[in-house]
Structures are given as C-alpha cells and as structure tokens.
Length: 294
Image 1: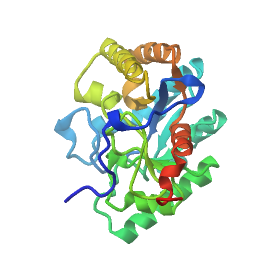
Image 2: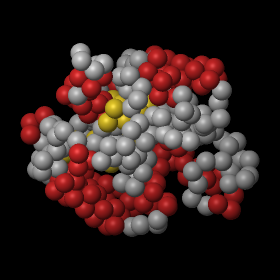
Image 3: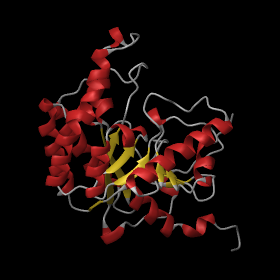
C-alpha cells in the first residue's frame, strides 16, 4: 500500500529552518527509562536463553539500568548540565518512583514510551490501542506532574492509527519514524515527526555492532560534525539515544562523559529537548496547518 502518514520531501527542496540563537544543530539527549516484564523475551545480550522463563541472564542485564546504570548517568548529565528528554515507560512510575523523583528535581522532559518495553502495540485493535494509550499517558501525567507532548513506541512500534489517536489525546509529535535530520509535519493535523536515531543509539552500536567505547565517541563526533556542515543554510537535529543498562556499564561510562564533553562545547549547538524542538518547529511552520487561502 502507499504510505498515507507522511509525504516525500527531499531535504534540499525545503524552506530553511532557523534554530534559536543562530544555532545550526538542535541536539537532545534521549534517555530511555524502561521496565521489562520478567516472563517475556526482549532486548538481549545472549540469545541462548531468551526462550526461558525466567531468563535471569538477559533480564538481569536489562535490570541493571534502573538499579545502577541510571544513577551513574544522572551524575554525568548533572556534570555537563544536560536536561534529559526521557522516553518513559509508564510502569516505571510504579516500579521505580525514585527515578521519577530524580527527574522531577531536574525538570526532565517526559515523552511517553508505552506501558513497558515488553508489550508492543502493533497488533492492537482500535479500541484496545485507544485504551492503552489513554492509560499510558494518564499514568505518566499523574506521576510526573506533566502531560507528555511526544511519543516513542516500545521498539518504535505503531499501528497505522497511532498518530491520530495520540493527537486526540493532545500529543504533538512522534519519534518513531527515524527517517530525517529535520522535523516534518505528518498528514495528521497538529502532529509532527521529530528525528530520533536508531544508529546514534547505544543499543545499535554496542549490542548490535559490538563497537568499543572509543568507537562510540568517534561516531558521536563524526555525526555532529557532519550535521554541522550540512546545516550551513538550514538547521538540523541530532539525537543521542541512551539506555542506562548499556552505556552506563562501568567500562563504558567514561566514554559517555567524553561524548557529552564534545557535544556540549561544540559551536553552533542548541542543547535542548525533544519538546522544545517540536515547539519551535511548530511555531515557525504554523501556516502549514491552515487550509489553502487562509
């Protein structure tokens, strides 16, 4: 079938985007704060046990994130004065309230990321998905004190109805369609796509490709330098996607510090959040939502 959610738009034919302060790059740190069910397979480091229930090896590896890794990550974010854009499973509110409290103290942005990372919505019926989204967003709003404005599906999954249902619930953007270096408008009134990287992403690099810490630092530098060059005439977005059970293993942690040191001191970077990127882009393109002639 033809794609209905968005139109083809080559980046070389668009009106220029101008970020605040004349910055070339809008950069946000996408922090995935997740809960995994103990009796379902999910992201794993060793495939030999993924079919077991329970699977202590892989579940324990993932569970390192909320128990240890995120606290090491928070120290780095604080040191570099980075405000996280959090992709939050709503189950975190009940399971790990200390993380919610730490994020509220730091004014993190909360982006809805499903109930947990074991349940995918791709096969839900319309009413099942509507009830699911309503519950996830309401739980996050109640626990964080702020209604989410954006959405990232667990494992970046959606149905063809997801953006429309999210718009009904007052959300403004999705991060699932990792196909651009700039935000763009979906064919759903009021709904944007904001760039999210599946490659500048610690799971892809360390688990998918078995890269080293120095490799990670160099790739982050190369990504930013290239986007900065591309953005001479029109702004770009860079996301740095992190999972505390991966990047904050003790032997990797110092390389995250090195990468953050580079990006926060790079010229022409607006260190921001996914919410602020969506808000700014919506404001500068507001006329695109109006019917022709208005």
